[in-house]
Image (tube, rainbow, N blue to C red):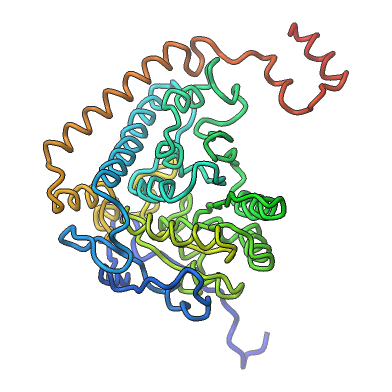
Length: 411
């Protein structure tokens, strides 16, 4: 090593706040609600490059819906959206308790992110196909998937629609446009593009949506998906849920020096936007705009949903080990349920009492479903899937060696 040359070094990004620190979001630039223009669906991507560095917002601090991205949903539709988010949050709370009681092995909740999947689902058609991560159960809830089926899958009991073949919360329902969740993060981003290409090749009308977290954008699947989506103008909406934290590393590790995740779409010529992921109205409006682009043959859109994971990464995680306990409360985009609730109150169609009644009604419904599901079975108790099921569902015609093994096992 030469004495005249300074030694090389690496930059390791550090979060602005660690356990014990005072949360500081002063460098987080939040545009005013309604400040971002709504371009035409067929806009040239080069004309909206700045949208990858702003944030589309509809609800202002007073709970009013303002700007060009507002006005798409009726009061009844907004109340339905509020119900979906309250249902998801209540469902999560009950299932987290069940996991702590040993009734299931594992759970992942959506605390603080409910608007992302619940609002997005209502902008899609029923036969579109979603390729989700494990934090988009709102796609199922907003699509009226039965709660008891979700619970049976979590408990892996004899009525589990997946027959015990998936980890808890890794749902799958072709009928509800919900592709099987994969624990190998990032894979389904690329698969969503392939499914969308197949839909176009076959002359179908259905579009696909792909989902990925901020941390998984550092994997090669993310970039491969963008290559194919842009090259073949696949009818797909590609969603990055930036909830600020991967499992235990903050989003800057995966983002690097690019500024925003949405900006990565620029290198592929893909229209790329950022949306306030805690604003139900904004998420729905952006989802509808992007899905219209895909359905009109205009190709992919990349959406970065800016939100915050208020809970742990999973039931196995203690976030206080790597971030301040006060950080969630300091998150400047607020709580999605509270924000939609206040908007409905401003509209004069909702009240605190109605909200309390809704919460109780939803809780009663979930408790009832939980009792029915737990009566069938939970982890280690009650009726379990048959061992016969492990031999099924792989081959159209079971090969002789598996028939023999199944028979030797007594099935």
